[in-house]
Image (cartoon, rainbow, N blue to C red):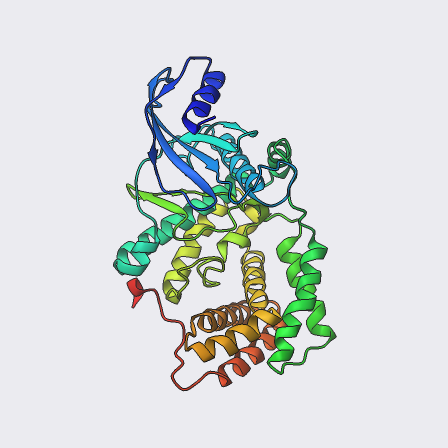
Length: 388
């Protein structure tokens, strides 16, 4: 069934009217999904007008396996659950910071949401804009993230109901995260000539358990709040693309600018004073739903744990040797720049707030060893062009 015909059927069943759509306008999407805007010609509820449809893309014989914990159906169901959950959490709010969920079809991997309009991402502002505009949008982004975290804090059970009705979630056991960090970062440290002892492993487990375990900072996290996963429209930020989202520690998202945007293609540094203002704006929103965030010690312990995770992940053995050796031969040091910047970010916040110092000492030694292997022409990761 064609996407247009399928969407008409889904909306007719949802609204109880015979819905007819005009031909769609492709909005680009990605290799993971097709995104289309439709204008409603007949059967629309008052005030809808246009809507956006997102459908999972299938390639090379893929099927929409609803029982899988990876792949097209799993990603689409994460997106669906996030939009439905947030639409419920923001039910009584006009300025909802995400596209409002309308309907979905799990058999065909399709969701329908309201059309928030056209805008731009944060990435062009960081890469080609002014410092004023970039900071304004960056601040608005993390105010929005803070609003999402605040309104979803303590609602794990309701999220689980929505997500589990669609298909299985990927297991997220604290022990699995601890085991990975106990195995892989020490390989990278050993490659750099850094020896660690039992006190390192004990504190590493403490940091990762703090970051990945249950606690008062457990909220709905985007997991990828990157500059190109938003729309900036009339001075407001809307979050998009919840394909990898789930409940988790607020620091999963809040660490992003400080930890050099761990999953983003356009990673660069942000000035310290801008970071402080952005984090303050985020925290002001978070505390409305998570009162524990008002406590400096507890707040910065979460943020430090998040930066520790980013730094330790960057030290994962084979990856580290690859970027140092191969990138050095090719003369492309960007991955080394990003890795060192993430190590520095964790060292800095650990020193300033006094958390996870033993892990920070090992990371400090690793950063020094890594820099000793860089050639004379190596330069540190620069600031985003907007802040230079």
